[in-house]
Length: 232
Image (cartoon, rainbow, N blue to C red; front, side, top):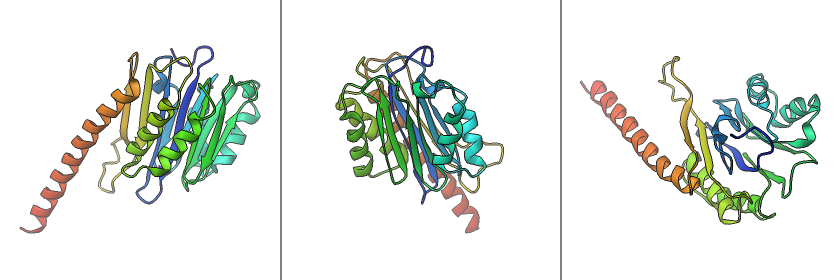
């Protein structure tokens, strides 16, 4: 299970500030990566906690983002009091799209990150130093929904080598709320996980296509109902 012992992982946290989506995509060798690494909250930000992952970075980080702290401030807040911070890796994007990351000096090679406008890509125990740059290029080049762009980054990272031990687990989490959403509804727009699969990134991409098709149908049907009501 992910989070017990050392876990090699590559992930991206990102946002689409114009459409108001925030999300995380991640893949690794151990199973259940979706239960530990990805965290996000609408209009607050997104976070990935990995390597020798500190689970508490998730809820504490989201709370700090909700309180208006920047990505860099969240990274400092979470790592400052952590005696094992040099074993941790963290990526954060905040409500305004500002990104920050942390790679402890004792994370296993290859380990590192790249931050840019509206995103941070990071990884550890990677096959080589080209995995994270490949993710960056793919995310910046891809057009489409945020979930599609996150998946494109994962797929590019895998093609570049990914986790040096292989990949069997993957997750994509995207949060969003339409103005008409009930207050009782979750902000989880996409929440997909694949475990113990020979090709987890391809499989989660297949599921994502189906999930987004269902969402498009739902939104189109609702728009049609509203139009009929308005023309009566």
